Length: 93
Image 1: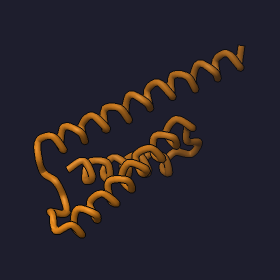
Image 2: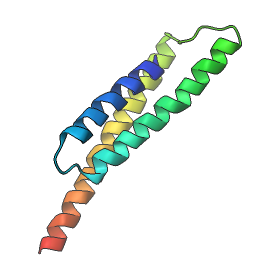
Image 3: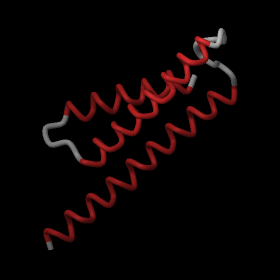
């Protein structure tokens, strides 16, 4: 489940990044983090499939892990955006 959640988050953040005229570095870093997590779990899903297990894990623990990763990505974006904004304010002053 965490694989599907991170792919969805990566697609949404990528859409937001490419939609903006002047995208922020914080959004770019968040996009790369979600795509990296999606790639990592894609390899895990393929290895599970090759070991004759299910392709996706729909357990409660896996869903909780996906929610934690989404929350961490959103928190990272908030902190990175705050730092980016503060630097712009200090540079302008």
